[in-house]
Length: 303
Image (cartoon, rainbow, N blue to C red):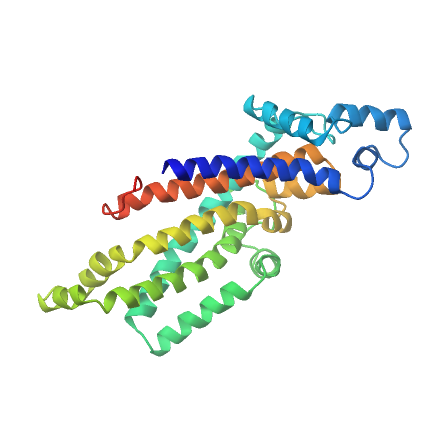
């Protein structure tokens, strides 16, 4: 576990270095891009000094880390507000969306996976597999627009965009959840088939236990560690992958802020958001590792 924490810190340091270095690799003058083509040279130089772009990259990187340790990610070039404040204001919307999308994917995905495994090679198994392939194949933005047309425009049962009410969460979380459902159902099916074929499952069945107890208490529980890994990865992916979904549904989360910041060439904000996504992904994976010991007490994280 210590090695995992050290690796996580090194990864974050690497992400920070890449973010600082990318600005130097951008074509053109970043300060000019922020100031605009109509800005005077004096204004461009002021922005260059303000962002520290006139200093060597190693100095810029050190200042980035120094500010980060103080909870300071700089000032937005677009709004003039502290980057940290804007990120913290938008973060709950993105987390809310990712949590609901993951919950939908976990509940429906595990249920479909168990049904497919217990009906192996039947038409039900084929149907669940086909649904899984469709879920993985459909682009998020296409599915989001399709759901808006059907449920918001034609049926008028939920809002098409915004975050004015709880019902506004339904379509974006469903859009995110469909992809997770497909991944989780396929992983659940394959692990359940492996566990259901083991000797101890035949022994449990020979004792006369009800099939439902065999499947959900013994087989599903013992196949859950690999599924938990996928769930953790999916949650981290949804946090970062909410960019397109938030744009389609005009959801005021970090993804939409990232798109707006890229369009405005607000480099401090882009750096802050990408670093936040990377940090959240690493934290989610550490929490997933800790949950292994809860699901399976035989797992020892200190080996």
